[in-house]
Amino acid sequence: MPPRYFKTNGHLLVCQGQNCQARGSVLLHKALWTHLERQSLAYYKTGGTVRLTESGCLGACSFGPALCVYRAAEGRLEEGWYAAVDFPLATRIAQAVQDGAALPTERKYGPE
Image (cartoon, rainbow, N blue to C red; front, top):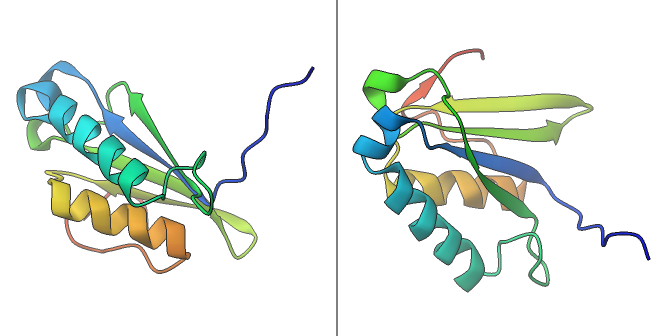
C-alpha cells in the first residue's frame, strides 16, 4: 500500500539551530503545531493545507527565531523568510498560507 498523500498550500519551517533555540524556537514550534491542529489548518486535518517542520539553520542566527515558508503561487515557487518571529506573526503567516493570501511583510528578510 503506498503512503497517503495530503494536499498542501505551503510549508512552514521553524529553525531549530542553537541560536534560535536560545531565543525560543522550540516553544514557538510547539505552540504553532498546537495552533494548526486546533484551528484545523494542519495538512492532515479536514480542510487544512499547512505543513510545519523543524529545520536547521535558516541564516538569521542573531535574529531568531527564524521561520521560512514555501508555497506555489501563480505558477512559481514563492518563499518568505522571517526573523525574530513570535507566535502572533507565525499564526498570521500560517493563516495566509492556508487562505492563499499575501504573506505578511513584517520582519521579512532575504529574497523578494
